[in-house]
Structures are given as structure tokens and as C-alpha cells.
Amino acid sequence: MEEFHKVRRLPQYVFEQVNRLKASARAAGADIIDLGMGNPDLPTPKAIVDKLCEVVQDPRTHRYSSSKGIPGLRRAQAAYYARRFGVKLNPDTQVVATLGSKEGFANMAQAITAPGDVILCPNPTYPIHAFGFLMAGGVIRSMNVEPDDSFFGPLERAVRHSIPKPLALIVNYPSNPTAHVASLDFYKDVIAFAKKHEIIVLSDLAYSEIYFDESNPPPSVLEVPGAIDVAVEFTSMSKTFSMPGWRMGFAVGNERLIAALTRVKSYLDYGAFTPIQVAATHALNGDGSDIAEVRNVYRRRRDVMVDTFGKAGFEVPPPAATMFAWAKIPEKFRHLGSLEFSKLLVEKADIAVAPGIGFGEMGDDYVRLALVENEHRIRQAARNLKRFLSTADETMHNVVSLNAHR
Ligand SMILES: Cc1ncc(COP(=O)(O)O)c(C=O)c1O
Image 1 (cartoon, protein in one colour):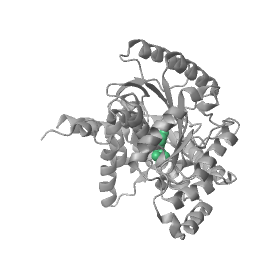
Image 2 (cartoon, rainbow, N blue to C red):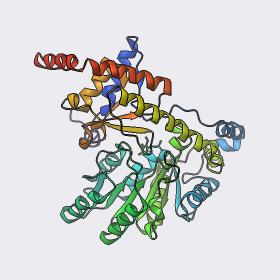
Image 3 (cartoon, rainbow, N blue to C red):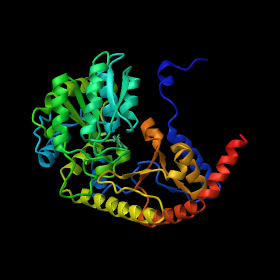
Image 4 (cartoon, protein in one colour):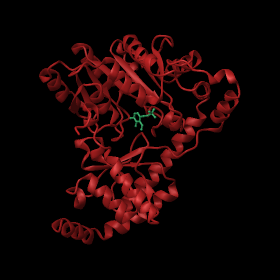
């Protein structure tokens, strides 16, 4: 029987293939060090959990909540933007709470896309950026990821040659998976371009607080004067406060776009459970010490990974932000492609990573390493890698003869 139209556009997650291999290796007793999924391992700070427990005792919080977010939560998000970015937002018309930023992004795509609309999307990128729009009937045109001058040539060409003219441009800095960080000057050029060509800008700022250069925190696109005329930005509590399972994020910015998302959501959900919204408000109104602690943990892990993996013969460029390193596959293995290389790492080095191809075809020379194991386990991974790389010639010989016999 033919597959449903939408399902046909959603291939099996590439990461599933590595996950399956990981699960069977673990079932066979292997101690797999999992640097694959970007699933924070740190506990949510106690004060936030305590607030949830307190609020849930009140039966009035057990009813349907507010789809767009309770007023206090939207005010807290507006206060965060004012404090952190100097951006003034109206919490009633320019802020909507979402069930994680992923849901917000996907439903924004539903809200604004007509069949065949062209979306300019980074490649490689976090999959929902492309698939959110594909599910909504849009068409994806891949863009450069580097936030420098090389970004604008392809962008110009895309606008000149796309029919119809592109509806929206997606930007994601700090980037998952590449960890690139954008400057405010870059955003100024993006907004000027978007205004000139009447293109919507959707900025995914999920890693706003996971950065390692304290003197240079990632900016918001909304810091550009007038950006709110064309832009919406998504933020997430998942990484900032180690709350991935709570499903709490936000979209803020242009009123027309926020209204469109709010309308779609009003048909789909009743908002997050009220105690979660109250605890999230409490977190946002905190003094920032929780966030600094999360940042420090990732920074230490990053430093250990860059150092020990490098000494083991696997070069890892130090990411300036995010909870990921984006590393080129060692030359000897690069022709295998990132999926086969990732499978080899599970089988021969007891390490799971995310194959770059899972983020788009331009990612196939790379693997993404998530900083979700502790320093001790990262050191162990480096030892495993060293062993793996020291027998690389033999391994490649076996892979070649295995393929020859297939
Ligand atoms: C770039 C990016 N955007 C959005 C998300 C989704 O976050 P949330 O948990 O808020 O849905 C992630 C999660 O990994 C991400 O890496």
C-alpha cells in the first residue's frame, strides 16, 4: 500500500540507525559512551523542581491552562529579553509560550506556509527547521551556515532564482550542529536583506545561554533596530535550565507572526500544565546562578573533550557555544560517509555520535559530539578512540573486504 503523502516526506531519522546499533551493543554488555543525542543529562535545578511540587498541590492548577501561556510567564520572558538583550517586548502581543521550541517552530511553519512556498534553510541544521516546513507543504532551499560574507552570495542567488520568491529565511546561531555563533553585525545585514526583499526571518536561539566566551554572549536578532518588523525568535528552557522533558519554550517578535502562531496553537493545545508554567516563570525570574552553573559544566566538558580527543588523534575544534562539538571525520575514514563511520565507532570504539548526514547532506564529512557525558566518561571515550585510531589501517582493510563480499 502506498505510504501517506506526509509520511512519505518524513524519512526515518538517520539517528535511529545509530541508536539501534547502540541498543544492541548495550544489550550485549558493551559500555557505550553516548555522545549522540543532545539530551541534557544534568538535573533541573532544585528550586525549579520545588516550585513545581508546591504548585501542583493546588487543585486549581489541574484544569486546562492557557494555550498562549499564563500572563506571568509571558511577562517573565519579556523581562528576560529586556535584561539580556535590551529588547522591549509587549508580553500580550509579542510573546507566546510554546511546548518546547520545537513545537513552536513546527506550528509557526503550519501557520504561515502555503503549498509550494520556498523556505531558505541552513544545511546542515537541526532537522525540524527543514521538516517543519516540509510537513506544512513548503519547499526547502539549502543555505550556507557560516555567518560571514559567504552567507550572502547564495542568499542573493536564492532570491533571484526562486519561484515563488522565498517566504522565510531560517537562522540558527549558536548553531546546532556546527556551533557557529553570529555577531550583531551579521544580523544587521540579514535584517536589511530581509526587509529589502520582504522575507520573514525565523531565528532559533535555543542556545542563547550556552556559550563559553563570557565577554561575548550570543546576540538576539531582535537587537537589530526594526528587526521586529520581519522577525520572530524562538528560545527554549531545555538547555538553559536543563529542562528538556518539561517542554517549555517561547516565540517572540513580530505581532502578525506571533498572532498567527497563537491562533494555530489555540486550536491544538491548552498550554503546558499550569504547575510547569509557574515553575518556568520562577526559573526565568531567577538570579542567573543556575544558568552560570550549567554553562560551567559544559565548558569543562568541552575543554576535556578538545584536549583528550586531540591527543588521541581526533581533532575537535573547540565550540564557542552550544553543547556540541562538530568534528571532521579523520581523513582515512571520510570516504565512508558519516553514517558508516558512526556505526564503526559504536562497533569498534564503544562510542555513539550523531552522524553529520542526519543534519543534511552538507554535514556528511562530520560527526556531532554532544557534551552529555561527564568528564570521566569523556576521558574514557578518548582512550577508546586512541585504541580505535591506532588500528585504523586494519579496520579499514576489514571494512573494505567486508564490502567487497557483500
Ligand atoms: C537548535 C535547536 N532548536 C530547537 C531545539 C528543540 O528544543 P526544545 O526542547 O525547546 O523543543 C533543539 C534541541 O536540541 C535545538 O538544538
